[in-house]
Amino acid sequence: MQLRGGSSKGLYFRASDLPDDEPTKDRVLMAAMCGVGAEDPRQIDGLGGADPLTSKVGIVSPSSRPDADLDYEFVQVVVGGNATDRTQNCGNILAGVVPFAIESGLLPADESLTRARVYMVNSGSICEVVVQTPGGQLEYAGDAKVDGVPGTAAPVICNYMDTAGSACGALLPTGNPVDVIDGLKVTCIDNGMPVVLLRAADLGRSGYETRDALNADEELKGRLEHIRLQAGPKMNLGEVSGKVVPKMSLIAAPMAGGVIHTRTFIPHVCHAAIGVLGAVSVATACVIPGTVAEGMAVLPEGDNVYSVEHPSGEFSVTLDIDYSGPQPKVRKAGLLRTARLLSRGEVLIPGGIWTRT
Image 1 (cartoon, one colour):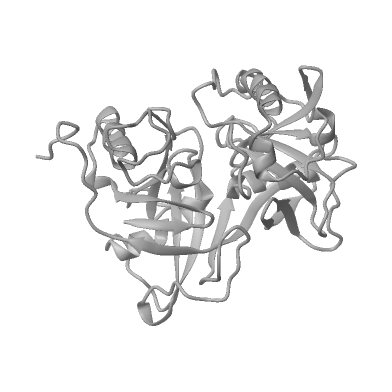
Image 2: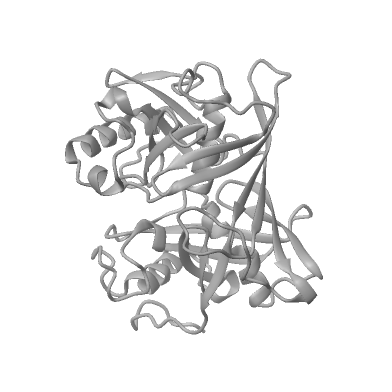
C-alpha cells in the first residue's frame, strides 16, 4: 500500500511479503521505488517521487515482544544513490504504520480509538500510536491540521518513549552541549534523530531564507556537508558520506511565537518542513543548558508544548521533562500527525530482481 504519513509518503509492506535476506530485500525496495534506474534521481521508472520525503518504505509485522503489538522497520531509499539507509527512524512514516496494519489485517481495530505499541526496529525504542476507529472502522477524515500537509485529516497521536540516544547511544553523543567544528559552534544531539544544530548567523545566513534559496546555495551546502562528515564519527555514527544522518539544522530566533526557527537539511536538500523526530531533537536541545540554542530559544512558560518553526509553518512537540537531575531528561514526547491511505495493489518490479517461491 501507499500511504501519506505526516508530511511524507511511502510504500508499506508486510514483512512476510518481502525476502528474508537484506540484500535481496533492498534490491526489491529500490526496484519498487526506482525501477531499473536506481541511480536516476528522477525515479521515473518506479513509484518514488524524486524527493527524500517520497522515497520511503515502512515494513510492518506483528511483534513477538511482550511490550509491543507491531514491529516497524524504516528504510530510506536514497534518491539517485542506488542505496538504502536504515540508520534513522521516520516519525512521519510511523504515522501510517497502524492504519496500514489495520488495513492489511495485521491488527484488529477497536471501537472509537485503537492504540498500538510499535517497536521501532531501527532504534530499538517504543512508540504508542493512537488512531481514530469509530465503530471499528478507520477514519481518515477529520479536523486535525499539520503544517506542511494540505487540508485536514483525523489525528494520529504518537507518544514516543525513551528515544534519547536511539541512534548514537547518548542524548549528547559527544558528551558536550557544544562542540567546535570548522571554527563554528555546533550542538550534536540525538533524541530519536541525530541532528547537528548550528546558528544560521554563524554561517552568514538569516535562517529565514526560502527552501529554494537554500537549495540553490551551493557554498552553504558544501560547508554543511564538510561539518556533517566530521560530526558523524563524533556522534558514533561512523563514516556518514553515504548516510542521511546526521541531519543538519540551522536555527534562528522564532518569528511566529514558537520556541525556535529552523531550516533542516536531509542531508543535502532543505526540508520543506521538519522531520518528526528531528523536531523532538531540536526541541530537546532548546531545554538543555549550554547548547547553541541557549539565549535564542524562547521557552514556554507554564506549558509543555514546544513549537518548532519551519519553512511551511510549525511543529508542536509535547515534552514530558524531568528536571530533577543535573541535565533535563525527556521522559516522553507526544506528537500530532495525520495519515491517509492513497492506494493499494501490486507494484511490479523488473524480472530477475527476485523470484518468489
